[in-house]
Image (cartoon, rainbow, N blue to C red):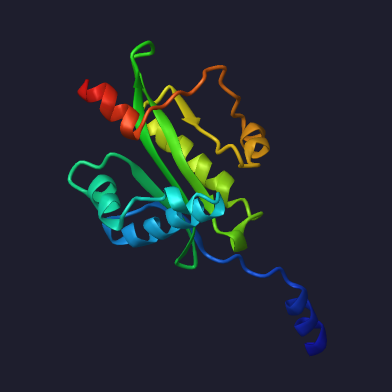
Length: 173
């Protein structure tokens, strides 16, 4: 009888580790910074990664934050990150949520963390009365299938940008 009980315990499903998705706080800024740096490394964009911890502290955790960061933690260790900011549609008269970064650590992929983070960000979009959520997918990112599976569709719009010297020349005339 004791052997059967031990065997049943050995075959019992393992308890799931404690996971949480929560909005990052100022004391999490270094973790957010390291996850964004890991995302840049993942995409091979280390050379373009110029943000500093001070930039994140000022713009994401300062008096008037420009963006929000959400962390997925398993047993207190951050494994996933979503950052976003709001834009505004004058046609719709409502804000739009722009998902800027979605990242899951290599060792935590395939566990549904990315989907759970996007679901939480979608709820946040609803809380903020957004009429849509959008994201730009890195040209080397194979996650397009993942986003389409969740219900995202590709926009017919083209994205143009200007930065650096071109922005200065145009802005300063």
